[in-house]
Amino acid sequence: MSILSRKEFHDEQAAYDYVEARVWPHGATCPKCGERERVSKMGGKSTRIGTYKCYACRKPFTVKVGTIFEASHVPMHIWLQAIYLMCASKKGISSNQLHRTLGVTLKTAWFMSHRIREAMRSGDLAPMGGGGGIVEVDETFIGNDRTKKPYGVKKGRGYAHKHKVLSLVDRSTGRAKSIVVDDVNAKTLVPILRENVAKEAQVMTDEAGQYRNLRDEFAAHSFVRHGAGEYGRGEIHTNTIEGYFSIFKRGMKGVYQHCGKEHLHRYMAEFDFRYSNRAAKKVDDNQRADIALMGIVGKRLTYETIGA
Ligand SMILES: [Zn+2]
Image 1 (cartoon, rainbow, N blue to C red):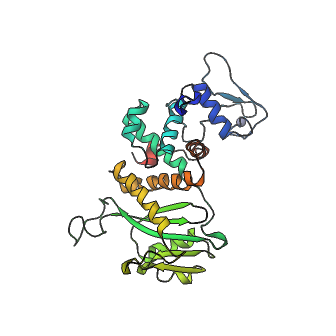
Image 2: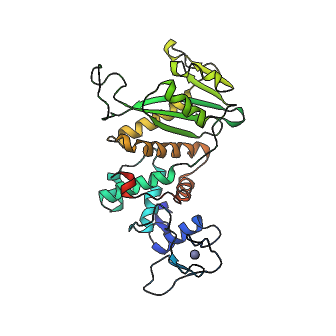
Image 3: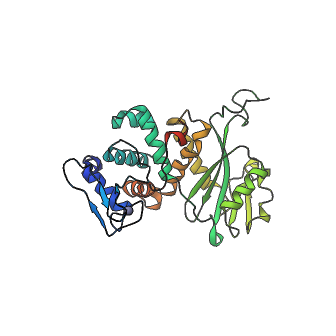
């Protein structure tokens, strides 16, 4: 059977059942007072699908309250289609494509995709490289940062006018985390590494000067001399993170060409999410979509907070 034939992608009640089973593993829970016992599903023809009443605080509620779906008029089964498509497309899916495939307006598609990226954003996770694991660190340059003038360099050369992204990949857990940065100086990068990498980690970078003193920060620091044509010595390499950058760059070039700096962190969260939950780690498309769905709680975004 085609995955797209599944009931929750077509039937609104089935879609609600699907989301409720994941967001409320212990049964319907009042988002205002946390009540689980004195709660009942509202019936009746004029009642909206998925409405419950809490008899403790006497308020009606649905599973959308407090999630990225709150205040959205898009039917739940369309949301589930959008989440699935974004989770199953390795290089991402453009708002334009979502607009055409889902039959929603371009503006709605754009807004939905940013909310789904928010659901993909991992919260406060443990630092990488705990227990002495290897963390690869590298930075990449992408697109065109219109807030910066290409000063003193010929058009298309140099990195001053590009967006700068610092990424970390934990080689044991396969998790990726990317941070948009203003520059790639040690003063900017080292505090970010301190915050996100465990002291006991072994850090691998290239020979760039900004990583020179990492030996003082972490249990070990090894680097590859790319300038000297070296690609690695045994365990010492940055091939994992370079592989990650290549997926990310192909996606950003092919699908998300015109990404402003104010949104770049959300696109990074999307690529980090798919990479951290990828097929090579035995996470299939359904599981990846379910993991994103669990992330919908507590991440409500409005047009104002997105900066539309
Ligand atoms: Zn209540």
